[in-house]
Amino acid sequence: DTAVSQTPKYLVTQMGNDKSIKCEQNLGHDTMYWYKQDSKKFLKIMFSYNNKELIINETVPNRFSPKSPDKAHLNLHINSLELGDSAVYFCASSQRGSESQHFGDGTRLSIL
Amino acid sequence: QKEVEQDPGPLSVPEGAIVSLNCTYSNSAFQYFMWYRQYSRKGPELLMYTYSSGNKEDGRFTAQVDKSSKYISLFIRDSQPSDSATYLCAMTASGGSYIPTFGRGTSLIVHP
Image (cartoon, rainbow over all chains, first blue to last red; front, side):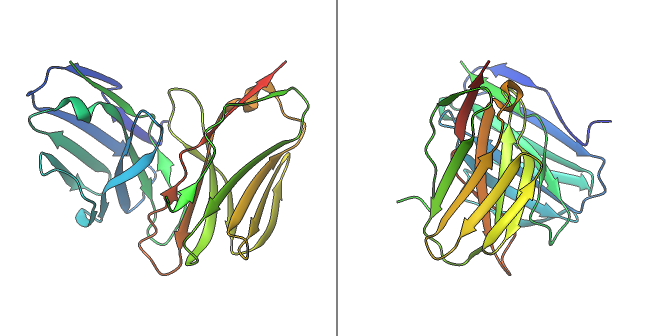
């Protein structure tokens, strides 16, 4: 059973489109995250949710909107996609108070 | 200067070699230090976790933290081709948000 699963694995789309990425964890964790990994491999936190509430929102354009319907799910919706949004987006989860995080395998977003 | 510096490599070694991977950091508040391993097209997975200074050993892997020098290391003994991956260091401050600050990762290639 996959602990943190993301769909889709690959997303190729045109500039200006709107797209969503879904994430689910079956570890019973109470905190979930979205990270962006750019072409230079830097992992940068975008959002963090604890028990469905947003606790961290780094400097991210408001075209990015996370939604957490329950503790096990955290989705990311992106409006008006731009070339600079091309990256790998990782979902992760952890138990609050723990430093270790479990990552999904990423969604590779390419903007044409 | 970034908070966490890590040489991206690639570092290429023969099978059986001892590998040394390193990170330096500037934030003296960091107390928790982690090493993640990331295989190609996969998400990072936690390899080692250390609190404050000292050494920690787990099989062929040893993590070392020198807080006075703001320097952490991961040693891999008897390296195997299956160790070929990107190794990311990560660290958090105590009492904080538990969101780690990641290095950009070092690409390791172990050739037979």
